[in-house]
Image (tube, rainbow, N blue to C red):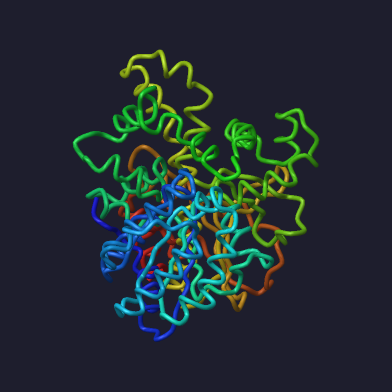
Amino acid sequence: MRFINRIKELKRLDSLLLSEESSLVVVWGRRRVGKTRLLIEWANKHKGVYFTADESASAVQRKYFSVAIDQVLPGFSSVEYPDWTILFSRLAKEAHQAGWKGPIVIDELPYLIAASPEIPSILQKFIDHEAKQARLLVALCGSSQRMMMSSILNTSAPLYGRAKELIKLRPIGVQYIAEALSLKKARDAIEYYAIWGGIPRYWELISNRDRKLVEDIDRLVLDPMGPLNDEPNRLLLEEIPSAGSLRPILDAIGMGAHRLSEIATRLSQPVTSLTRSMPRLAELGLIDKETPYGAQEHHSKKVLYQISDPFVRFWFRVVAPRKSFFSQAPSQMRIKWVEEALPPLFALNWEELCRLALPMLAQQWVGKYFYPAKRYWQGKGPEWDCVTESEDTKELILAEAKWPGFELSDIKLHQIGNELKNKGIPPIQRDPNGKILYAIFVPEKPKSTLDPEFRVFDAEDVLSALKTQDG
């Protein structure tokens, strides 16, 4: 699959090459998110060196690294380096003599640290002295977010404060999946994203468009031999240190426990036992905390936990509870079952994307800036899918997001509009003289004759707004 998006990240990396001084850049993010591809593209573009560490012994790692440097400094690997200090010193000296400034990319840094715990301190001295004199550009990257934080981003870490760029790479937005997979309909883009999320590695595995979505799901995930059959477990176990013990929390959320007390009950543990686990799952980009619109996130007791990554959410809601069944059932039966299980996931993903897009759509509609949209709920009262307010508090937008498996008629659309209006207004702090506006999100926009106070947005509108927002 060709390289998609990452325009902002490449611009930030390229800007470092304009400096006459040495530079350190740190890139991190969850596994499979595309860090390696980004750094290889960047290194190749500027005739740099890319090296990825592994779980080999320290001496072997030094040999592999020196072989990689041979690409720009021929003969560098002809010497055996007894330690990293000597290797980096000679690297800086030869690079300076050759007038080569990098970039030097060291990927999977946590593996290097696991084999040589002294590496952060050695790199700190290298960056502060030899690399500075040689004006080298060095990039450090890793997937183990816990180790990257403790080794580089923590205030007590040797390399803390030395990076000129800190780039946390996030999943690619839904607005790019159609381009990557040659999807012609906006509706298809939303449905594919609800399963595969924004992880480039998953997009590569489904880039053959001769198959249907459910056929790819069966081949890659449901089939016991599928490459993604046990993917969430691998994501957790490959962390350094391993995050495998956090798996039961994801199981509980996948089975419908969203409050901390509910999760603890499912696990037969006290709530206090989760105080460290929940932040780590959030750090890994696997869960989010959700509070109602208008509530203070750090003080509200109305906190719900959701699995944030679409693929991980799909796996724990659909695959994990029936893994034994899927391992024995024939392909046709697996496909039939998953077809019936997908619509609720499509609807949930659609709501989230509508909330992301609503501030930009509202800006285009009203001509003002709006706050990020959120859900609103309270006890057994009504729930609003999307709520947002203009920065001057003069407009409040209430929206409903629907993802039916068929095109909505005008009559049905009117019914949705009336139900939305009949809910009233959520009990939040607002300007009592402010204007109330209503919006409805549906996959495809019918030729509707709704009252002008309603706006109807469809999947194309959402993707377009997110692309504008990203730009």
